[in-house]
Image 1: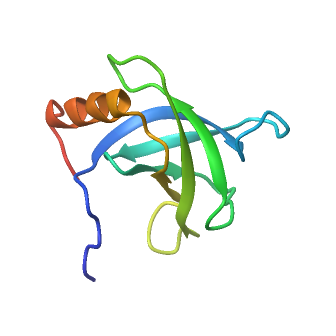
Image 2: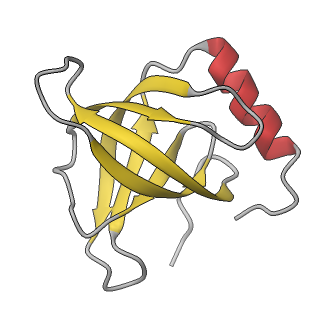
Length: 112
């Protein structure tokens, strides 16, 4: 199987607070983040949102300030080939947040 990843990922154990859309009209869901890259993250969960669902997310990587950004569900996994969950793509990541994530990845001892 060919690896289609565009960015280096690092494993994390971080909680992601997620809302569908960009307003407060929907409740918050919490997902366990398993890895992060400059382009997105993998959220482990048996609850799978539909591909192309727009999200507003908040998470905090160790040693960094909380990050908030828009995201899009890029792909889902039902768990047949690994852990069930969703790959999300960051859509409105501020440059300072991107720089912080890149620094976190660069300083991480482990990559995927």
